[in-house]
Image 1 (cartoon, rainbow, N blue to C red):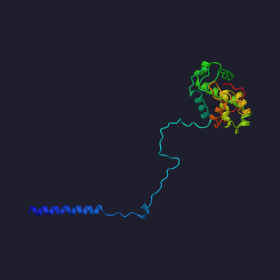
Image 2: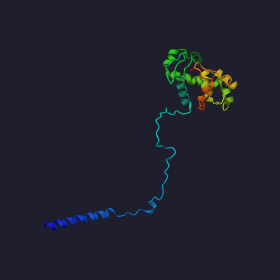
Image 3: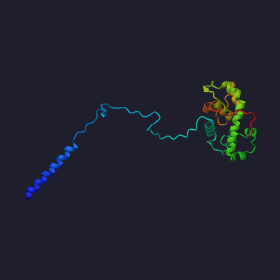
Image 4: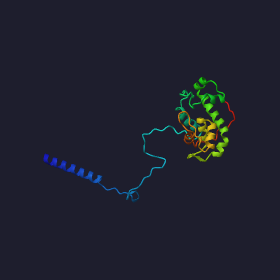
Length: 210
């Protein structure tokens, strides 16, 4: 009797397993519209990328006045409002005392402690240089001198470096008068480095004061 029970149990298990296998191996019909017959190229949108680099870049400030002044301030002093260089030039934009006096600033210590005053002085000096160089900007803008494309922002940056008078002489001599500052930076270098910013919002002023 026990043998019959064992045999029946074994046959029952085989039947169950056979039924399960037949269900799992049943073929599934795939619609023809979903069949893949050949490799398909997938393109990422051009403004997206999955690549990452190890380089870290500063925030893009743009080509407006703000971008211009921050780039120039970084070149002059690494953006440090409270620094004085070995020649006595002051602050973020490295102003000389004589230039500050022209704009009505006479207290160097106060100037060095006041970032807001330094920003006003920089803008005021831009309006002053734009007045002095207005004719030269109109005459030379768009031309090439010593391989450098002349732009309004390049001219104003060079005037900050070497003075408006020296920039006039550079332009009118077509590059023969390329004055350098005490550290060897030339007018032509600033013309190239700071070209292409939009400074149309700066209005030229004669003898402006801070």
